[in-house]
Figure 1: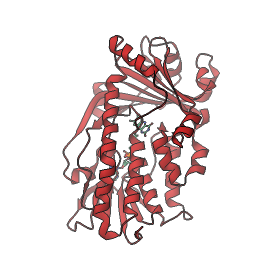
Figure 2: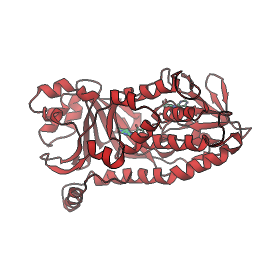
Figure 3: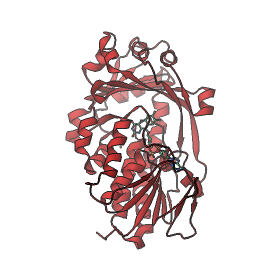
Figure 4: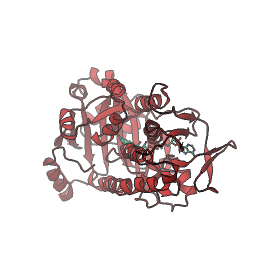
Length: 397
Ligand code: FAD
């Protein structure tokens, strides 16, 4: 492996993708500066799932001890029918994933996962140079006069030059715009309610106690909408994601505060267990308009490359957006860690070659699930349910 300590990388965006990349690069001996526009680094108050593909990346970064302390492990994934809650399919997770994929399927509170990665970036005892983090630094442009030393320009008049620049700045990526990529942003016509329901309220009610008897990842399928829920922090919260057709207000504003009542009302006529559960969402219910991109050919240009939602924003209908960003981070660090400054362009090209096709397939599969999850009752729904009956844990990601 060639020495890589001689060069430095700027990562724009301190979300889960950007920080995982910063940590992975650090561990290859690369000096990293992260520029984040928010005044503080953090994540939204919601849950997140990492399937074995992403858990493997996180464990590979040496985070086992920290992840053991914050994860919740679902035993299986159960798919239910909207009207009566009958089980359409049961997929084994838990020990099955660990045996089959040699990596776990875990759930977290996003803030916990983000904190663990952030702490590893700044831990003075960790391998490689400590990551430099700057908050309140909105990148407003790039200066690429010297193609081998791209500079990020921030709104407060600062300039951050490095040997490579990684745009991990999310679905509305400024770095991507600066690279001259086409506008491939699509609105799905759907929105997601997100809520955290206190686990003690769930456990106290006989109508919802079944949710704590066995930790499961649950998906309910219904006509034009679906509902996902799972426990996080060992049962402290039930994380709920409810995807429904989007209102004009949410479509316009992207994120809108909501309420338990509105959330429960979005599932009229569903199995009684659904309103019993959703009506317990006391606070912090929000609605997010769901956008995505089509697979994108523009992931790199000379010494600038994209990562995560900036290049492969997808619908959350496979819970793979952040997980794909983590895979990006691992491959990016492998490629950059194997070259000296002269080899950066080739390393970024190999990173894109290894990642773009696969991430594009996951984007497309997530989009297909928009139809697959939402069939009205009828022949297509019955065909889907029959197919799922025979699904026992194999996955294409
Ligand atoms: P982001 O998280 O968007 O981070 C980008 C960062 O860049 C932000 O901190 C932002 O402030 C910063 N930034 C933006 N512009 C600038 C700028 N100009 N200058 C400086 N900083 C900037 N994925 C999973 O793997 N598992 C799941 O279970 C899952 N569930 C989901 C549920 C829902 C309802 C949704 C909507 C998504 C879900 N996802 C899931 C997808 C996942 O949340 C995203 O794919 C992931 O957060 C993307 O990470 P990122 O770092 O690429 O981008």
